[in-house]
Structure formats: C-alpha cells, structure tokens
Length: 279
Image 1 (cartoon, rainbow, N blue to C red):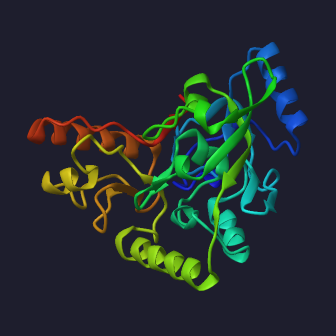
Image 2: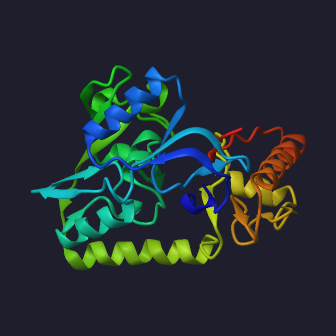
Image 3: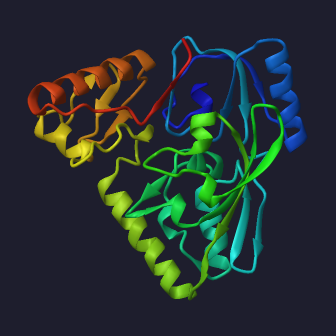
C-alpha cells in the first residue's frame, strides 16, 4: 500500500480492485458483504496511514479509473476519483470561480466531500450542491447539500459510511486573470509554509477549538521531533513527514507522544485527522 498512499507507508492489502463504473463499485461491495470480507474505499491515498502489516481485506480504489469531469454552465460534475487540483484547473479553464481554495488539497473529490475538506477559510460546503452516493443497501441516492450535515471535517456520508460516486459543485462566473492570480497566491503560500518536498498525509491533527494544532506542537518544543523515519516537520509543525523509510509504527508512536506532551503542557487533546487503516 505504500505505492498507493501519499505517506508512502503501508504493507500489502489482500486484494486491490479498480472498478470503472458505478455498477462495478456496487457489485464489488455486494460481494464483500456477502462473503463477509472487510473493504475500504481509497482515492489517491492522502490523509491515510496504513499499517506496516497491510490490510486484510479488499481495497477498492476510485481514482484515475473513476475521474470524469463535466462542466455544465456554472456547475461542475466530478466523479469521486477526480483530483481536486484537476477540477480546479477545469474551473479555471471555464472561468468559474469558487474552487480555488481546493487546488492544493492533495486528494480526490470523494475524500473531500466525505470530510468536508477545506483550506484558507473555505470548505466544500461552500460549493457543493449535491452528492451521489451508494448507501448501505447498494442503492444510489442523490443527497442535496441540505442533507449532507457538513461540519468541521465531517458529514452525514462519513457518519453513515456511504460511498461517494459523484458530486456537483455550484460555482460562479469569474475572470481568468483573477482566478489564476488567486490560485498562484495560494500555491505560493503552500510552497512557503508546507513541507511539500516530503511524503506526508497532510495536516496530521484536527484543529482543536480555539487553538491551532501546529502552534501547540511548536510551543511544546516539538519542532523537528522524530521517531525513526517519522518527523514533526520543521517547516510546519502541523505536519508529520516521512523523512526516509518511516514505518507506520514510527508515525503512530510519534503522534501519540506529540499528543501526550501537548496534553501535559497545555491541557488540550489533539485528535488525529489522519485515518488509520489495517492491523
């Protein structure tokens, strides 16, 4: 799985399938349920830490094989596997504004919808109009924005473990130069402040209410703190990076120690934003 995660960490999965249609997605999940085999939906593997022992079950990847994008007036329809950066580029080409914030979010539409991803003061809830999902009975449903219960890094989709198939975004007409300028501005911010030169899973911890995780970690004196090949980024303490051949155990140990010290020094509990998968 290290080949399929942005952390570049993780042992083998028992099965790895790449369905191309909604029907194939439904059939694979149906078979997993009938055979009582665990399964997990994977996009491009950002925001994910896979065990060194891998995953005993079926990984269903919705990524390059499930990434169609269509522009309809001021709306964009994107399948779950479409990358946010590619969707942002299509919006720019169509002179549609509102999705610039997501151009640097290292994930797919499916993952962004599930966790109501956001950056620079904007979130998916600001642009989503409806989402097509597969429910627990393999029925396809279209959920309007009002039914998504979008909150900080959560949604009804995450709560009920629906599978995102497609999302519809409502944007606004804009001007090419202004959209491009905003995307360049945000790109420069990311490059200057985030450790993009190393493998990571993005922001490691959720933002505690009233605080910033990165600042708490920095103030705890943990900038550059490392366990094995895992390290708290010296560039941005909110990121744990794979400095070189880090294992999932390295990352897990480091995260627990960071959480312990922040709690001890400031009385604030850090909750992981990175999802763990496997044994």
